[in-house]
Image 1: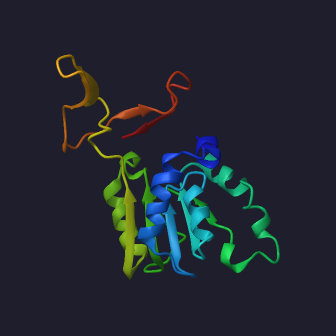
Image 2: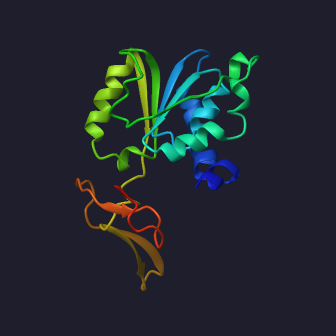
Image 3: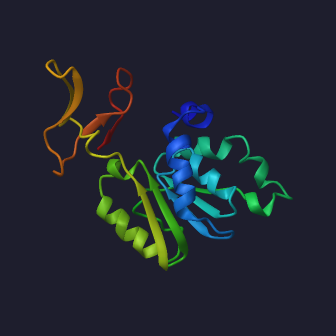
Length: 193
């Protein structure tokens, strides 16, 4: 995953999500942006390049460790780091317990392709409300349920029209499913959707 996101020139994250987030966020120098469920820090690092102070949080110690050691992060901790491109401040933390952030201290929060995998999403939104400044903004990117409803969506083929279609059996219905993180390998590692 890390290799795909960091080195892939044609990733969904790089070519579709990032340019649109940059456009929508209208990042201003010095703003505080929190990247919740930041993974290995791809988006967090991109927003530091635009002059924001970025704080990344993820529940996975392994992903935060990768984020802290990616090229560019280590050198920015040295004296003389450019003000515009300060290091991201990373924390291992669940998205609903941001104890390292003060009330009303953040300008913007982003949650990219992860809210659908967080079990207590309501508590995450409450915590975001706590840390956002009065005119702060929350940006969420989700998989559209028309394309991803675990165990309730599938592909079909219409022989008459010769067209492939997406079948949905539970659109706009709340559900929770365990998903194996690495199909075929480490069956005990699961997430929820």
